Amino acid sequence: MASEHLGNRVCRLRRLADLTQEGLAERSGISVDVIRKLEQKRKHSARLPTLHALANGLGVELTSLLGDPPGVPSNGEADPPALVAVRRAIMPPLFAPPPEPSSAEPLSLPLLRDEIAEAWTLYHAAEFGRLMELLPGIIADARLAAAVGTADERAAGQAALGKALQLGGHLAIRLGKSDLALSSLERAVAAAGQSSDPLLTPMVSNSVAWAYQRQNRLDDAEHLAVYAADGVEREHGHTAEGVRVWGGLLMSAATSAARRGDYDTANNMMTTAERAAGRLATLPPPENGKLVSVFSRSSVRIERVRLAVQHARPEEALTLARGMRLSKDTPPSWRTWLLLDVARAHTDLGDAPGAVRALEALRRVAPAWMRHHTLAVAIVSDLWGSPSHPPGLRKLAEFLGIAT
Image 1 (cartoon, helix red, strand yellow):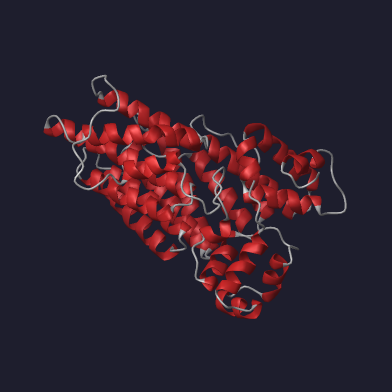
Image 2: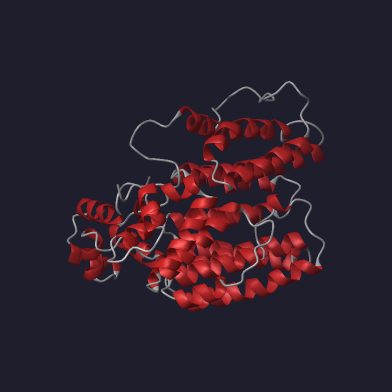
């Protein structure tokens, strides 16, 4: 599980930066009382704008405060062999011989695209171990497809390579390897530029914006997303694929604005995106939505719930979540985030039974994800430290190792 308390991380990084609590408060714009409560473990979590401000004050990436991603402990030891293989696939040796197919079967672009789509499904289900096993072979096959055949076949192969490397970037972000993520995404952008898919470059740009967010480069992330969104709207706003890519970029820009504290701008962007998502019902659907974007009315509403929770608007978050009907293509990872945000909103309102109900549902649908997630642990820790324990809380606390 995510064992290091947020307060311990803040204290350790503050001392490395040779800062007092008062000095960190001055540099970050966060009250010394909040910093003191975190370090004394009277607070188990903080909102994303607060974490971004603390990261700025400490001079570290946001990931240093967020802790380990789900299921990938970082203990200072050498990378496991599966991650080494992923790294080598993303960054093959210089002057290496031409790639060879990973199987004896003839290379098939439709089959390769199906494999990439299934790999994205594994990613959204947080099956990172299985994904690490499969991704090196997929990238190798995509690299071969990009190098052989006619000009049109090579362009289609470059599109497959771009999507495979984009997935490599997302996986590396989840593994806490931000430099590897940007290396993979830079290669994905290069492949996209030589591909047959005009929307691939802006799709990868959205992933780069997410990597920038994780590095606390919020202005860079927002500007990149807005720039890419403007281009998509001009040239592809009349297709479902274009609307979905544009909408995903607008959501990304909104998230960056929210994380730097501008909730009104973020909410306006999200409202615009949600209205645009309604247009998808009037347009022919994309051939493979998994390879385009998760943008939909459901995904926009889930993100609006998240932003409301992060900006201390729990009533607004629960109103947005109430009666929400999730579309069938909503990834499992987005469903789990929604349950976690609903639990946080109930906690903020002092509704412990409501929080426990949401957490019990989260445990049913994503037990491994919940066990490793720092926010889930923090919420249950907060509830366990309160005077009254609603039914079901003890089982959750025991499951997360908080109560014995």
